[in-house]
Length: 332
Image 1 (cartoon, rainbow, N blue to C red):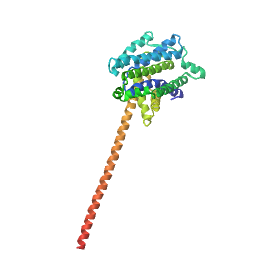
Image 2 (spheres, rainbow, N blue to C red):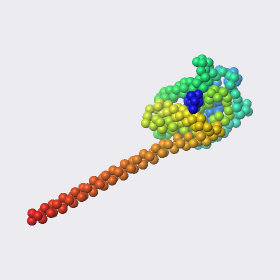
Image 3 (cartoon, rainbow, N blue to C red):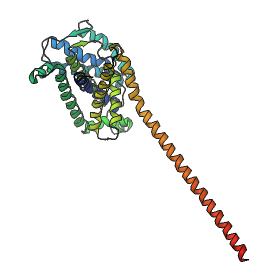
Image 4 (cartoon, helix red, strand yellow):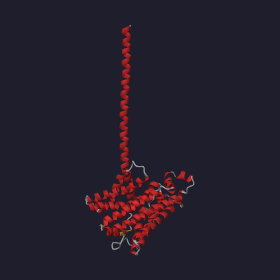
């Protein structure tokens, strides 16, 4: 595996890590299964590509992509909170509708190239005289760290405490007078804004937007969160938990890059990703089973020791009794 491919995997990990932060909001904080991800990710990329082709500034295009992602989250949130449709089904419905919408945004084309246009990545590459891959990694680092800091400070406020409390105990926080539906609505909007931002940055990295670019995004995100938890399970700091999600995404893409460099075809990518996800999700269960087995062995050893000590105690009592009886008989 070359240094270039490793840096490319790390850059992809940071860019997709912004999407993972969005999934972290709904999946881990709000405890809501939002499946809008695959659609809103592609929406962010499509809006960025089309607005960039229209001549807008790349940074402004990123903001427009985030706004489009927020609208996707708003639709899912309204279906879930106002129409009482289950979150999973609401996300699926929005995702299905977004496929057609994304095609319309791209002008009824499956993909659109932006290879000849200036983007944030090309600006960084020209400014520091870097290769495209390394410039993309720098952009991913800047944006992902900025998002982690913003989320850390937002969720540390009183309003942020309401968001976290909604995921922990919705009935309790509702009894305190907090409108949990509005909290969920805000969380879904914020989540999909980050997801769309990640999609827009990926378009810059790949130099094209594709209608199916978000396929499997929810799986990548959940796997990254689980991988991050495996490495940072002992840490309870909320900021570390946010960083662990980004770190898990980097590890996920490094593993993918290593497997591809072993000689497997690009067509096997979905199978490779599925295997990585299964391993990541099964790892905590394996660890738990190993710990249970260790505890069981320790308990059985302790029981054996106690049984031996009790047997010795009984034997000692019998010996004392026999010796005392024998001593009494001799005296008589």
